[in-house]
Image (cartoon, rainbow, N blue to C red):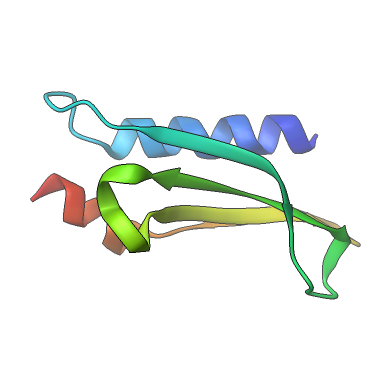
Length: 81
């Protein structure tokens, strides 16, 4: 299920990016965070290198009662300008 979630999130990022420009999108599936609500403390993030220091556009993971992610539309919209 975790794999499906990351694939869905990555598809959403690619759908939002303008097609006339090439981007460097990385999916990091083994992000370890010290947050109690992540199952086993692991999550994932998707980054777009062209955003520089604010390159994370998606973050999410598996939780005790489900899975989910957040999409940073403000950062994606920055790329569309």
